[in-house]
Amino acid sequence: PNPQPTPTMKSIEAVSLSHYFTWRQEIDTLHQRLGEVRDNYELEGLWARGYAGRNRINSNGYYFRDNYKGIQIGLDRNYYEYKDSYRCREKDGENFPCKREKKHDWTYGTGLSYTEGDLKLSRGGNADNWMASWWLYGVRKFSNGGYLDLVGKVSRFSNEFSAWSSDYLLNTKGRDKTWGYTLSAEYGNKHYLFENKDWYLDPQLQIVYGRIFGSSFRTNNDVNVHHNAVNSLIGRAGVALGYEGKKGSAFVKVDGLREFKGKLVTTYKLDDGSFNASRFNLKETWGEVSAGGTYTFSRKKDKLAHFYVKRSFASKLKTDYRVDIGFEYIF
Image 1: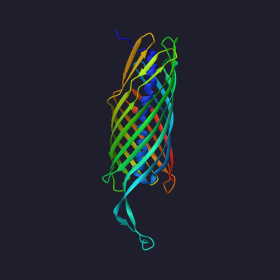
Image 2: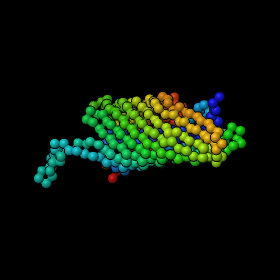
Image 3: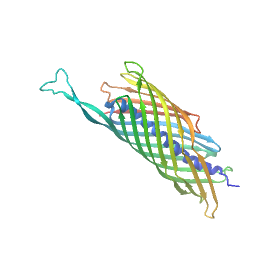
């Protein structure tokens, strides 16, 4: 018979699953920023947000509970072309010439993020992990209300773990590091429900492709561990109901998501040639419910606070909660 994954193996793989899950979630946080600057070009500038949450899995002997926190900072700028028309005011004249009207094309930006987690594993095991990412993004809004968000991301992962065998006699420790990248495109179209343009519906489609590169390391008890690369292709369809006012905005959103490709394959070898392997299938369909909003503290709209909460359902990798809070000062 084929060898079966041991409890220690499942704990080691649970640490890698926590990386995948944090990485999978992070793209949604940046898209909140893209929505803000897309709807109000004056919000371009330096921004920051903090977040915290808890992810967990408890499936077929794989278990972790990850309490994490992190921060994102970024900078974006509008790129303009100009129309062949001019905007004039009553005081415009020889000393105050009419201004050529701007035609907004793109908003470009870059950002950094850092997330660290405290993992609890089966039988009292634990792990510390972190992920650091660098982003590039672009936002385009069309005259028909449609928009396109493009994101590219490079990430660095690191973890240090301690796992126990089922009889609590063997303590396995190790450290693992690797890289990953993500490419994402989202299209949506905001439809205002009333003439005063306060309430709206925003249907959205998104595709995300990513790869976490393979890694190899040796544990304290001389086990050679190798994780194969994880390829991910996620599709998302959702709709948001929102409200926009003079002092801020609010929304609630429902999404359906599908992971089409993901699987984690891990091999274990001893120096005497002994071998074992396991596979965790990441393909699944799940849902998410989220809500958020913004509040403006000044007439110039250069001081802005925002919040965001999310929870998943029908997923092997569960988001018990996620809370994002941020403050932006535009200059």
